[in-house]
Length: 149
Ligand code: CA2
Image (cartoon, rainbow, N blue to C red):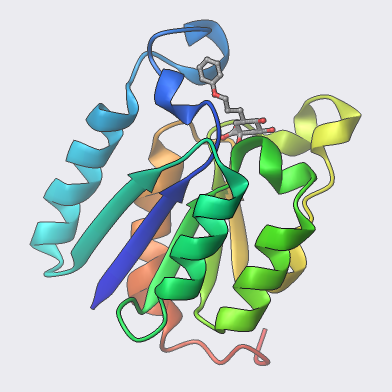
């Protein structure tokens, strides 16, 4: 099994700015923890970050045939990107939306996720643990019929 982790704009700043909001762990720290657990589960991981919407769209399109699940923290594009939503819908790979913060408990403009309707589920509000929870969800996602829940 192979999982593609995608990270959107500004997440390269994790651990370096605003630690009170997003914690002290860097994206590299989170990736290392995910890789360790993935190895235990015998799951392959690819972990990427981009500040460019089009690059994220390209990676989603190219995932077909290589990855079984996509885990995406689309960051601010969560709330704005019809392009990401269309790419997720078009590629047909089970996709799990994640966030460090609880987007529903923050400013109103963060409450709406444009990608949520085309994702299998959403994990938010658990800080860096959201990434680990998504790994556990990913290894179970294939067994879940999309229409059964
Ligand atoms: O909680 C999350 O994971 C978010 O996806 C983070 C996004 C935000 O726009 C979403 O509403 C929720 C922001 C990512 C920016 O990350 C930074 C990290 C350190 C310093 C500044 C920004």
